[in-house]
Structure formats: structure tokens, C-alpha cells
Amino acid sequence: MHWGLLLISHRTPRSVRTTVNPQREIYRAYRALVVLSLLACGCVFAAAPASASESVLRVLAWPGYADPDVVKAFETRFHAKVEVTLVDSDEALWDNMHAGRMPPFDVLAANTAEIQRYTRENLLAPLDLTQIPNTRRQLPRFQARSSIEGLTADGNVYAIPFTYSSMGLIYDRKQIAVAPTSMAELWNPRYRGKVLDFNSAQHNFSFAALALGYRDPFKLSATQSRAIALKLIDLRRNLLTYYTLPEEATAFFIQHKVALMFGNYGTQQLEQLRRAGADVGYVIPDEGALAWLDCWAVTSAAANRPLALAWINTMLEPDVSALLTRRQGLANTLTPSPESNINAHLVWIRPVTDVERREALWSKIVSGDLPETFQ
Image 1 (tube, rainbow, N blue to C red):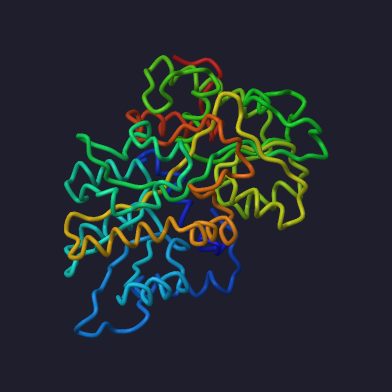
Image 2: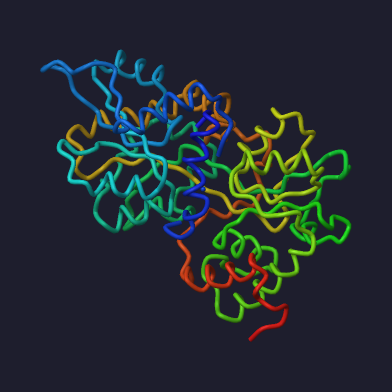
């Protein structure tokens, strides 16, 4: 994911659909093309064919989560071969897991909403945490696994947090000297024509629900949805436009001197803006921010569970986790994110229960077909 164009492929489908099934940019064109070619030719790479005496670990993951140098070090350390299959959307992940592959995958990376789906389908194995000692290195919020929906079920742990990003507010320091503290700033008339919003029904309804103080942004009543739709109609007065891709947002932000933006791609988007020369800050509003949390899990069909657990443990080595921040601009679960207070209120994305209603209303909001008063 430190691969700009590829990261769009990675996060755009997730950001639009992660809340539906219930999620970034930065990497240079060369590596993007390399990985895109891997995706095009079947998404699989392995260091070398395994000998008859070697174990093989089959990993299903997102670009950037299993870089070749990390894979090579693991292979050397555990005298095994690793086959990595890369995906660029939650749908691709799901399809790979249901393709009847033989031999099956051993370990996968998915967000918490997807982990819930896989657990319900009995596709994941309970984890023996004694075999993943590096979990003790994680920040307290990630060790409190029962507090994060999707990690546990029936008293068992099924997934270990690996990386995450919040969807905070990105602001121009030159126009906004004091960091905003509330989502309400998006509606401040001072920023008429200087606000960017991400084009997504799911995330807009959820973040607006937080702004309105609704308890559960993923489960809205018809009355709440109506109130949110009116709120989002009102936001149109301040919008320059909606964006979809992070590069698109960066271009708009710089060319049109945008003041404030709902940062759907979070810290990765922030990094891209800074690399493009923008003087921007990033905040988690007092109301909290939506956030995606990607985790490692072992499949119920794993042929070598000890090796799969060793993989997860290795992913939590400090030097490996640090690569997420250094290469991808992503937060890791071992060290506090410099862009997010450790006590910031993050609302981990979950599946929404009113997908069709949200999308129907959103299409009208974006097109301008929905009147400011409607029944």
C-alpha cells in the first residue's frame, strides 16, 4: 500500500463498501506497476518453489502487508516458503476464500467487519494467544480485544489487529490557524466553497450520525436517516465538490485552495497531501472518527497452524510493524500514531443495516434531486 495507484485499488472499494460489507495511496508508480502486474497475472508470488521437505504458508493479504523483504526474512527464519496472494478489494478477498482453492489459504488479512463474516461462515480458526507472544507489545486499546467488535466470538479470539486508519478532518494550516475540534466545522459558513467530501453513502451517513450525536452510526432509524440526509444537503452549501480517489482530492485541495476536508483515506491521504507540498494538519474530532482496523486471522482450513501463528507473531515484530508507518503512512498497533491522540475516540467500522436506504438517499443528495424539505 505504499504504492499510490495500487492503494487506490486497495482502499477505494473498501472505503465505498467496507461499511456495506463493512476502508489509501502514497506509493510510487514503479512499485504500483509491479504489484498491479502481479494482480493481473493471478495475484500470487512466491520466493521460489518449495522443496518436498519445506512447509508452505499461503497468505491472502492486501498490498503492503507482506512485502518481499519481509517474506524473505520469514522464509529464512522458519525454513518455509510463503506464497502471497494479493487482493485489491473486500470482494476479491471473499471470492478468493470461496474459490475452492486447493491447497487452501492458511492466513489472511481483513477488516473487522469482514472478520465477522468469515467467523460466521466458520472459515476462521480460534487463535492460541500463547503462540502469539508479540500481542503483549500492542497498545492497550488493541489488547482489549473484547472491546472491538469482530475480534472475538463465543469466548474465542479470531483475529489480531495489525494496522488501521481513522477518517479524520484534514485542514489547511494557512487558512485555519487553530485546529478544528468538531465535525461541525465542515458546516461553518466561513468555508463556503472550500470543503471537500468523499463520495460515499455509507461513510457520509455514518460520520454525519456521529456529528449529530447518534449512538450507533451503523444502525439508523428512518427518522435518523432523514435527519442525516437533511444535514448532508445542508453541507452541499460549503462543498467545492465530492471526491473519490485520494489523488483527485489532492489535486482539488491544492488547485482550489480547499480549507477543510473529510479525510476518508485518513493518514495515508494526509501523507500524500504533504508530499504534494500542502501544509495540512489532521485531527480526530471530539465526536470521534470512523476508522477501519485490519487484522490477521488463521483459516479453519490451515494445513500448518503453528506456522500461520508464527506469521502473525512476526507481523507484530516492532521492525515489521514499523514498516507500515514508514512505507505506507499507516498506523501500526504497537506504537501511538503521531496523527492521533492515543485517547482519541475511534469508531471501528461495522456493517450497516440500512444500505439500500442510505444509497437511495445519497444518490439524490449528490445529484441535487432531494429537496431541502422532504418526507
